[in-house]
Image 1 (tube, one colour):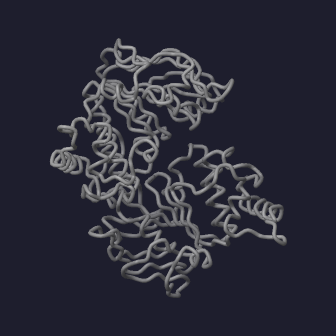
Image 2 (image 1 turned 135 degrees about the horizontal axis):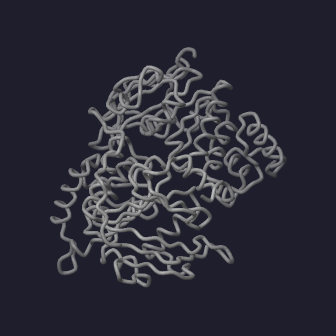
Amino acid sequence: MSANIIELKNIVKRFGKVVANNNVNLAVKKGEVHAIVGENGAGKSTLMKILYGLYQPDEGQIFLNGQVVQKNSPKNAVKAGIGMVHQHFMLIPPMTVAENVILGMETRKGIFVDLPEAEKRIKKLSDDFNLNIDPTKKIEDLSVGENQRVEIIKLLYRGANILILDEPTAVLTPSEVEDFFNVIKNLVSQGKTVIIITHKLDEIMRISDRITVIKHGETVRTVDTKDTNPQKIAEMMVGREVLLRVEKPEAKIGQAVLRVENLCIEKNKDILALDNVSFEIKEGEILGIAGVEGNGQTELIEAIMGLNLDKIKKGKVFLGNDDVSALTTKERLDKGFSHVPEDRHKRGLVLDYSIRDNLILGQQDNFTSNGFLENDKMDSHADKLIAEFDIRPPHKEVLSGGMSGGNQQKIIIAREFFRKFKFLISAQPTRGVDIGAIEFIHKQIIKARTDNKAILLVSAELSEILSLSDKVAVLYKGKIVKILEADKTNENELGMLMTGASNG
């Protein structure tokens, strides 16, 4: 390690009445992996967007290699060797890796783009940093982990020496996380500096050299990773002791609430996304679905919720004794379904709507009189849920699109848990959510279980599946290969079943 390559001094950033960064200080050493942690809405991403030039600070200074940076912009940041991989990848699926990487800085041979030369350079970068990416492949044919490595190649191609990674493991499988760690080690071994924004305390303990904690837009402390532990970091983030394990009472199992029988769903011609899937979930029971992303989880959720009904080849869905297979999504919700979607932007929120408006989506009938929405009723409903679910900033008129991912998730959790439901699908409930919010969301799920609700939990986090579920169904290539008691299995066994290495 050597001297500071980056220093942010007394950074202040305001968005209207919200102060996102309040005199934040950060120093990053050359050649280190520096983790930035904090609750959702603490100001982590805002700070990194200031460093990358997407936002201008209202006050404070940025130093790069000891020199003050004037009028920062993404273009100037790239010139200075700073690159950023955002939480939501910015790739064009029908185009190849090489076409995506060179976009905006194409090498030309006369009037033509010199794609072969670009492919050669990308292949060399891939080999040098052990990224294992074929430049001729289309983005749409790559896994999520490979997409992320393409984003990293984009930065390296542009000469980045400082890489900012925002929630880099949020959508990765356990094996992809291990590959990602190896990529980080390779980058650092070749002189790169890496800044990671993350919520995953176990991961930062493994991969980082130092950790800076930000709370309510202010720097709490920077510590050497070797001198701390997840419990201490969580307490600094939240300001109190945090329960890192799930406490759940013994299950009181009742009658079957949801039953799925022989569900077959078409992926495309001659290929099934789900192949004769059957299971049931009873009152007071959580069934976890474990599987590598893309093995039928999305199609299962959509079929149960009445989305994409035209793709169902055969099979039935029952709520109690009622066959609901032909019902619309709205009719299912009215009958007692509730749904925390896996993709909060696509299925969960209208990003141009306020917190208040998003909190009544799908329930507008309850806030309407004589064909008009009742503003007073909506206001008091929003105030109640914002306080109860600790949504930040606590201003009901704020647009949800400008909020942190975790607070967007809290809006959905608040809305869906407020419903009078019998059955809940909770898909990726804590994706991109901080440790304090994870604890809160887990308590809500356990409370629903205690209240005799039936819950289908879909999560990429095996630790979450094991700690919350009563039973775990492993989905592989559209089939349930095994249903296990959660307290009689472990991550290794589930990992084997998830990848088809064992059929149980």
